[in-house]
Amino acid sequence: MIGYQKSAGLIVFYKDKTKGEKEEIKFLLLKYPTYWGFVKGIIEDNEDEQETALRELKEEANIKAEIISGFKEKQEWFFRLKGHLIKKQAIFFLAKTTKEEAKKVKISWEHEDFAWLSLDEALKKIKIKANKELLIKAYEFIEEYGKQRRLIE
Image (cartoon, rainbow, N blue to C red; front, side, top):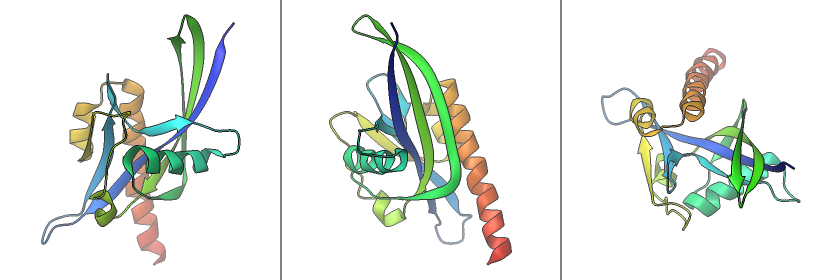
């Protein structure tokens, strides 16, 4: 028999602009015991996917962010837990925080470290192919979203 778990998470970013330089997007990566990845956690009975993702951000990194509408990606994989095969599904949203909020990160006991990284730096740390692809999609969405916003403002 196959068990099932459903999680929700966030790809969190902020835009960093230092004097005279081009604006740079910085992504939050958390170091789990065996890999670098994104904020995520199991959806509780009384929550929807976005509520879970925002709660997990507060629990795992101690910061707040705003979910950007229009970005929602799903990952699925299998793993073993206590001899049982588990099918895992994770829903990821994109969330923007401020540079000031980004400075407040305090990781939970679940993680060993964290980093705010550019796309290239983050892709070097991430070893899971699906997470690399997810980060690239998020980056492309941010770039396109930014162009669309400038057109209507």
